[in-house]
Image 1 (cartoon, rainbow, N blue to C red):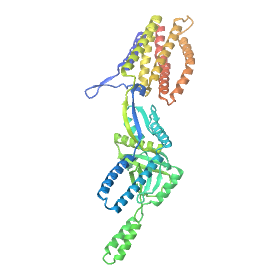
Image 2: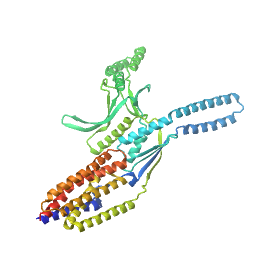
Image 3: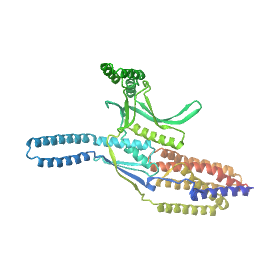
Image 4: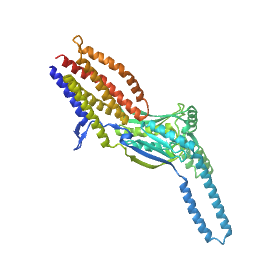
Length: 499
């Protein structure tokens, strides 16, 4: 029975090792696909997407128009040299155009300055953080405003780039006069909400909402606007009166004109909501809004999961843009390319084989030194490291060079723990029991590893990717060492000792 237990634990350890090394392959659409998750690598190992943002040169079109106008003016001047008055008028128009162009240049200089460049960089950084991009680099040329960003390459990279270059100018304007009633400064918080539309026993699905919460001043503005732009309650009555007036047109023209004036006066006033000068909606209000919140539906009600996810993504992107504010400088993407890492896959394979080779030599020494107990511990060690490598994949740990160092550290710590435990078991006296020796070893090891554990937990909360990667790898490694050895290694040694 004891041999069966040892054999079972050994087979389980070997199976875990095979899964960690080779994976689990299943047929998917006439091909074999590995169902075990791949490692997540950081930019220093996998490469990155480099995005170059330059300040948009809006004045180029103006300069081109000036050149064309100048050429046309010169041609006209040559053809109309005999008419002095026309020439003077054309010169006057040219002076006016140059004056307007100078004003445009001055306005560009007021916007495109170092302060706005820094503000734009900060807004882009905030958007990257809200989009859960922790592993990135961003550099700003304070003289030209040029921004160079490096972010990890994945399925969401293009969406991230689209969000960081969007200006995010929010406006509520009067539809008729185009007067700006509210803007970004009035927004306090934007989030995504969900609601189920149902009537009786039937349901039309779930609706995704963009919930805009305004500041105190913004809430007061919204209440005033909703009072001013209310839907006309007597709309139907006005229509009937107009119809009656139309019937009496033939009898009295003056009465018809008065009715038309009254209809114009009762015309419904509406507001238009815009983001980056694109109309989101035009509406009036059913009743005054006193909550200081505005809810906008994104898409239509749906029961399809894929459709709802797309609506949620749209709403989340819009919330990210509005929460981080409007970028003061307009940028355009000059470069968007994938930059390969200096460390290739072949380099990583070499490192893996070197680590594996050193580990095998160390385990052979363990077997030669402690015989059967050493062999059992070696089997357990292989299972522990394999389980650890699988765990960091599903814990979404991003592996960097420092993370690989963390893996090596865990391998060393577990080897030290195993050596200490086997040495004590090998030198135990008749009065000592296996259980007591294991407990003492655990206490000693725990006291020594506590400072490392505290440092590792601290590293996990540091946003710098290399340190965070090391911390997360080491944290999960220590957890696995504590639990796996308690459940597997110790039981193997107890079973062997009781033979």
